[in-house]
Image 1 (spheres, helix red, strand yellow):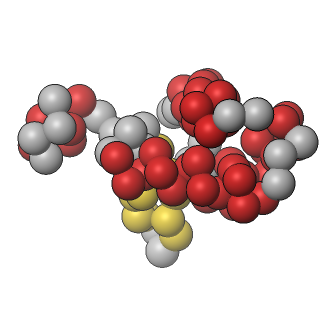
Image 2 (tube, one colour; image 1 turned 30 degrees about the horizontal axis):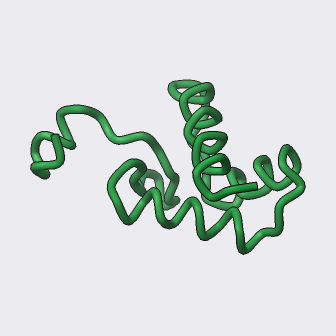
Length: 81
């Protein structure tokens, strides 16, 4: 499976869970690994690439970090829109 396909699955999963549950990086990796039967490093690389380009971001709250889709306001503030 190509990186872009994995990234599409990651994004779709995060959209589906938006507002329901904060997802940790390992939760996303486990879910996508189960769905695609890809190796952990392949999924992790795809996820990190999305974070590096700003399609996803880390957020911190309550002493734990999670991964989420950035809001349009955040993207405008960072000059990415």
